[in-house]
Length: 328
Image 1: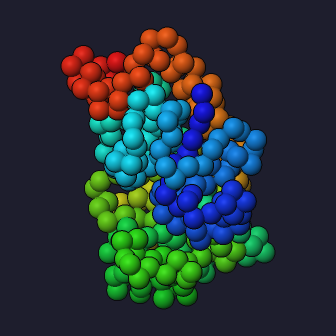
Image 2: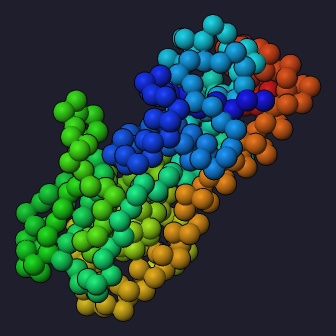
């Protein structure tokens, strides 16, 4: 059974140009490009038999992003014999997917819903180790719409000024037509001493979000101070992984703690470097390959499964509803 990755952008490029996109990390600033195009490139370069498409195939396993499911369905002459693997990202459950990829473990059941970590930021430039234990630059790297207001408050600015620390909000508005992705430097941690990432609502655990800020921090060898998000908590094994805070006072205490305890700061760097190995590109390629080729394809290749997938996506959805079974 063939495995396809669907994204409309694939129509714009030759195969060689698609694979060359890996060198342009700014291209991967939005979810569908990260999850679909980057995953295709990584698997293809690793030698796995995957195909890039911009139009629905007649049959096969199709990996696509939730955001593009409607376009895919509307452009398909028939959805019979098509098995959909939908990347949910931070959307809700898809009523019509056969399988879903989740970006944290919260809703995973290893039956229909599977957790695969978000790719680390491509081409990360690690912190310059010559900076030692100094904390002179603190950065947020991400979409500015996710930035908590306390990180723009006068109290936070004064706190940093008294310690001669520079605050860098490295991002753009994700929903803006004027977003300047050419201005972001999400891969460059060379002069970043500390990552702070606090979303808008610190009372929310954001069960739909990935642990990207933490994994990127580990990879870049930069300690992180983060909000109380479920994706981070799932990965936490020790206090050296990151510092969790839920208000401005706790944030300031955490920064001072790392300034006053350079040994802890260095332990967090060493620990992060070790933890990052489990979320390397190679390890995530292996997880994708095992899921697609060792789990999903065998599962959908049996006689009963073939009969089930001979139905259209809409017919499958009705059957699931009638039987009350997410896997009819």
